Image 1: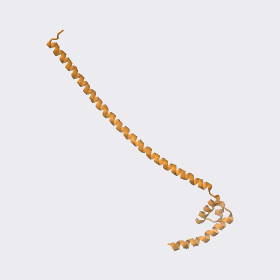
Image 2: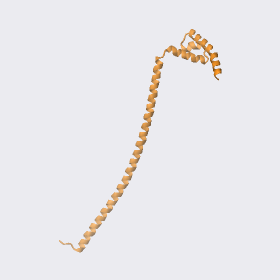
Image 3: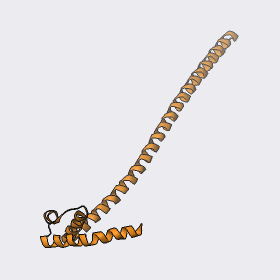
Image 4: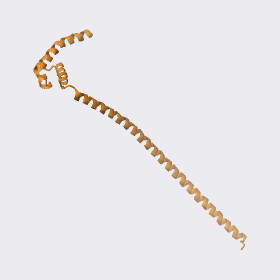
Length: 141
């Protein structure tokens, strides 16, 4: 079975048309792939930015948490120190502050839990020290 020249021309023309169609289809697929690649790269960049932001936020939060933990530990230590302090010492410190603010003996007895003789002694000491403190301050300036 031999093909005539016209049949060979038609077959060649059909094959050429198929090759052109196939090349067109491949070009279209290539364009689609490029577009999808750009979209994928844009998404990757967005995700990278979000990861970077989350990492930075986590580091900052970790530093803040560490700082708060340190402050909490200091507070616990101070609380333990206060709990272990002599309660009478606290009463005398409070009484001395009240005396400096102008409290009288009755105020000390009522607010500090110390006895009247102790409160009177503190008031006497405060009166004795007060003029000396004023003269010492004026000598310094």
